[in-house]
Structures are given as structure tokens and as C-alpha cells.
Image (cartoon, rainbow, N blue to C red; front, top):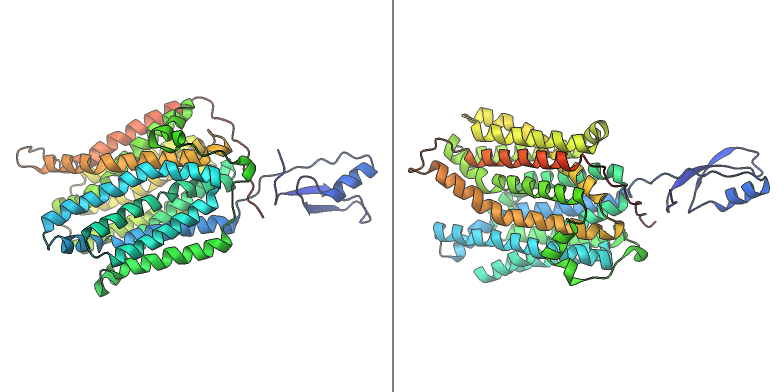
Amino acid sequence: MSAHPGMHSSVPDFGAGGGALRRYSVHGVDASARSAAQRFGTLARIMVTTPPPRKAALYFIFVTVLIDMLAFGMIIPVLPILVQDFVGGSAARGAEIYGLFGTAWALMQFIFSPVQGSLSDHFGRRPVILISCTGLGLDFILMALAPNLWWLLAGRIISGIAAASFATAGAYISDITPPERRAASFGLIGAAFGVGFVVGPALGGLLGAISPRLPFWASAFMALANVCWGLFALPESLPKDKRVPFAWKNANPLGALKLLRSHPILAGLAGSFFLINLAHAVLPSTTVLYMHYRYGWDTRAVGLVLAGVGICSLIVQGFLVKPAVRLLHERRALALGLAFGAAGFAIYGLAPTGAIFWIGVPVMALWGIATPSLQAIMTRSVSVTEQGRLQGALACLMGLASLIGPTLFTQIFAIAIGTHADWGLPGAPFLLSTLLILLAIILAWRTTRMPLPEAPSSMPCPP
């Protein structure tokens, strides 16, 4: 293995100290150890291990994702109200326009995630992440000051562009984390999503009670404060000699998806990844409607369930991914996590009472073991110069699933509860998600039967 900055190695010291074994911090091979070996004709054998990811950098990425999710979560309670106010208070018209906002945001993710991923492969991760966070903070200020609906929509579009930095954050993790530890690091980022999902809407509701514009100001402050911290805490993870020229043929969605066809394992797991995200789209699009319809839950009860989902997700992704991958290895951890996901969706769709629905919450949370394992396998299938493109392509698939999923599942739900259908199965959208996850299990398991690619050398994080 090649030596990287920050690595340590046990090297015999044959100098004046008299044969004592010491630990040297080496960059390549330590000079004193080399001279000692030459002096006595001894072959110095250096055992170099891959360093743990630089904690300050990993924590910054965690906080960046956390702040982004908090910011998005905080505006959930107030954005529909602002939209409805701008259309004269009509709930029907407000819902229609708010759906357009969601579609616009997902479309921007679909288009710009591969762009940011390719830019980070050329310019480095640090500037792309910091510029995106700056743009997000300024965009929240724009939305806080929006005088009409179209300014608010423009802000939402810019938000979708700036939030495409999630792809670059994933590439950064791949850079600084050895392949065998990536699943745990991706799980940590998943935990940030869980925390933001729990705290964001609750905090937004409290601030929104004071003023519907206040959550936007708070989100702007957090995003820009994070930029100020990042200027000092975030080192560049991609050395200049590992960067590649920017090319539009790779940065557009179709070009980015070509990368996913470059290796049989990558293509199969990309299909599984898309099915997973398409199945997941039922949760934000249909769950609240389903809870109100089937169990008669009010807003408080729904909020408690969502908080429970976030807490369980935090526990699984923050504390269980690492031991699960260590015990089962990535392939079996992926399959087991997906099996829990399929079981969770089945419980949601078939639960006759709210109490049984609650049983599905921790079961569904164990699904969180799967995606970090899947991403870790996929990062080993591309070179270090393509990690940005890979994460951009995956974010592109997520955007595509977000474009298709909400309409698909809400229409199925509408048909299932319609007076003419008489299915007697309001949980049909969740049962469709169960089927999608089962297909993802089959595809992922068959794909990973072939030999897994050798992990490219890990990238050192500059001191």
C-alpha cells in the first residue's frame, strides 16, 4: 500500500536510543528510519495502514447536511401557508401551486446534481460545497423577502440547485474515508437526515407561530454561519493531480447516467438504488393523507409518528450501520436492510389500527442499514477521479424518483379510496412500495454475486 500524509507506522529505531521500537509519523518513509536501516544493512519494513477520516472534515460534512435538512424542515410548516396567502387564501389553488413547487425542486436536483458532481471532480470538493452553502443561505434570504408568488417560486428553484451539493458531500466522504469504512460514514450522513427530519419541522412550527417569514431568516443564518465555519474547518479532499477536466457530456443527466453503465455491478446496483428511492417517495407524498384517512389522526398524532420515524432513523444510521456492516459485510447488510424495508412497508399498508402501524416504525427504520452499504459498494466500482460523477449520478436518480413517485403514489391512493374502485385497500401505495423493494433485493443480490471490484486507493485528506 502507498503511504499517505498522516499515516503512522511502527519503525525500528537503531540510533542512539539503542534498538527501542518507536512510532513514527511518516510521509512515505521516515528519513531517520531509512538512514538507520542503511547504516546497519537492515531492511526496514514499513507497514502502512489507511488513516481514519479526518474528524473535523467529516463532522463539517455531517453538520452541513444537518443544517440543510434543518433548513428544509423548518420551512415545511410555513411554505404552504405563504403559497396559499399569495393565491388569495384558496386552499385548492394553494395545493396545486405547492405541488408545482415540489416538482420544480426535484427537477433542479435532477438537472444540477450531476453538474455539481462534475464540477467538484474538476475544481475540488471544498469550493463547490462552500459556494452551494452560500447560495442556499442567500436564497433563504430571497424567500424571506419574496414580495409575490413568483419570487417565492424562483427561490425554491434556486434552493433545488444549491441543495444539489448533497452529491458533492457524498464524494467528499468517499475521498476521505477508506472503502471498508464508507458504509459507516454514509450512515452518519443518514443520521443527519434523521435529526433534521425530527427537529426541523418542530422548530419551523415554533418560529412560524411568531412570523411565517422567520423560519427563512433562521435557515439563512444557519447556512451562512456554516459557510464561515467551513472556511476554516473544511480542507480540500481532492488533490490537484487527481482532478479531471470538466465536460458537459458528463455533467448532464444523461451523460452522468452513462457512468452507471460502465460496470455490470454499478449498473445493477444503480437499478436497485432507483427502485429504493422510488419506493421511498410514498412516505413524503402519501403517508400524512393515509394517516388522516385510515386512522383519523390529527396533526399532533401525525407529528408524533414523524418524530418517531426520525428518532428511529437516527439510532439506526448513527449507531447500528457500522456494527451491522462489520458483522454481516456489505452484501448481506444490504439485503437484510432491504428486507426490513419491505416488511415495514407491508406493515404500513396492511395495519388495520394505528397501534399496528406504530410497530412498522422501528422495522422500517432498520431499512437504513441498506443504503449506506449499497453506496459503499458502488464507490469501489469507480476510480477516485469519478467519485463526484458517481454521487451526481445517484442524486440524479433520486431526483428522477422524486419526479415520478409523488404523482404515482398519490394517484394510486386516490384510486384505492375512490368510490368507484371499492378496493377496500387504502394501503395500496405502501404495498406497491413493498413490491419495489422486493425487486430491489433480487436485483442487488443477483448483481453482487459477481466478484466485487477492488477498492481504489483511498485519497489522503490534506493535513
